[in-house]
Image 1: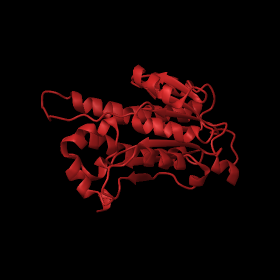
Image 2: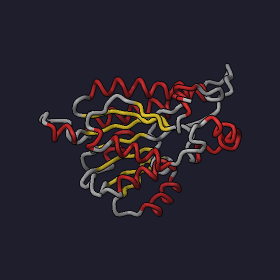
Image 3: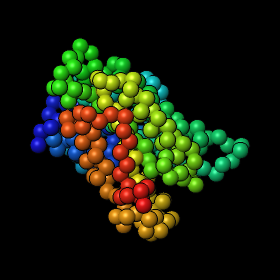
Image 4: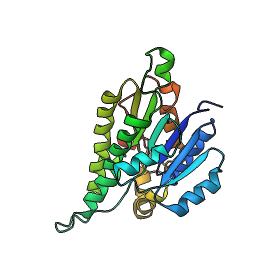
Length: 254
């Protein structure tokens, strides 16, 4: 298939489990991908898995507007889609004398999403100027996909800052979808328990009990999130914006 031939996609958190599968999903359909990550060794490992022909690794903490702009500029050409997967899942002791967990959760999970979206939309997005409004150009609108979590709906007793940040992503998605239409379609995904390094602690501590709550009776696979992200960036999703798609095996509706 060749649905993304000639298109460039920037994926933050690109060396993680979902990031690698998302890169693979685009590359299989001809896309050229920039994977952005803070871990140099994991970037090398991702490059070994994915190959170098359609891939650019970019090392960044994404801790400033300038760093976010540089991550998108690394594509070297107009970018069709920004997929922001980078995030931090850290337990919170709710210590009145230590605000650091809250600050990191908001900074890494929410502020960086805003900074990436601003950089993408104001300078680097493909097709955001001199566009006509015919059906062909609407189908080719640039895309942003942000990452929320089922924690924004269910809450998370051990991770209040994380849940708050992921709820913020939903509000940001809705606001940006209005602000950036019709040139950029903005959506989010909200994964549940997915078999990634980020979920290892949760799976180890209460995986069996958690799975009993999931109607599909299993943990999700990274590729199952990647396929939804690819759909949201495709012409098939040309009339979808402002939405948060839950990918959780049915747990939030059970």
